Image 1 (tube, one colour):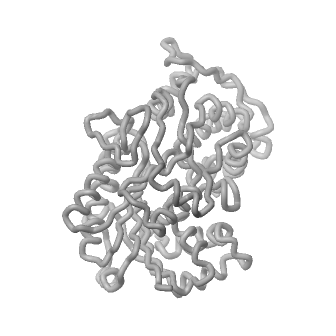
Image 2 (cartoon, one colour):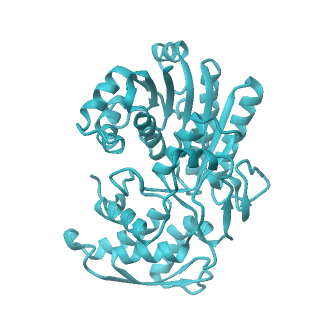
Image 3 (cartoon, helix red, strand yellow):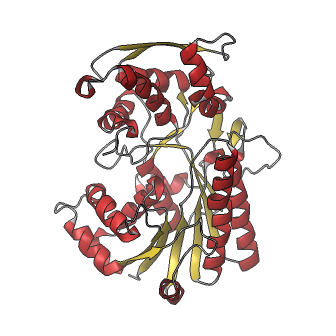
Length: 400
């Protein structure tokens, strides 16, 4: 069998790391044929290589089912993984001459670009940063790839790049005339256009992956594992932070009840499409290796999870009471409601206000069936697994 060469940006993030793991897991029988180029940045004086080795390899050993822990992955990383320093914020993305020559010297089968800022706020500073990293950064990376031997460029976007829409949403649904919930979504759509234009210009094969709201793992162990607590997790983190201000006993924080007295707006007839990150990674692998037709792919669950279900479940696991669902934003608000709608509600309301969205996944359904992969449902049992892991990590509020 021929060698497989992949490149991944954003491997210290959520989706990028799980794509990396999935390629290792699927090639455990012959890791010698897998070559990986990881592109990322140093942080806080810690090199990119050190960040990956310290953080990802232990978690990756669990995902890949390696009995001897991280040692086998460390050996693989030493022999088959190239760590390339890069920063999308820099004008020239910061790749050195030696690394640039290395990238240009090898054929890359699949180049996965998943690095991005996922900040959903709308301040001027955030908008400028999201544009520089997500849109401008993608453009600079495409310039790099144009000078390389890359067979497929795979861009990780978001299912919400379709903007505020409802009903059936196709994998290539693109409409710049729609409203968007935040600058992040619009930046993702602009990046998608850059990728499509790049394909038209160069003739390169592209794939655009659109995951919805990504949660922790529900297929590969440890179940519930996630390394960033955003999207709906951040809603739970908001209320946990309120609780932690008044309940200082960290060991019993989830045992002690806490009343909030707040009315929270959500559409009772709709929900959030929540998809496990390991299912996303497996879908990406199967789509690429089975060469599914098409350019766009909605990486989503078959159905929405009702807003009032997952919101209530989070509060139950946090042992928080007093939150009442309402179908419109209250006019006269108490102090906690004012704080909520100025902060978390401002970000989250656009996602809980919309009509149901049904994402079309038919263009890769047969590939997943052949692989025997089914998307885990976001039911009470599985959501409990997500919450158990989130509570163990205090929803990211307390550094590990």
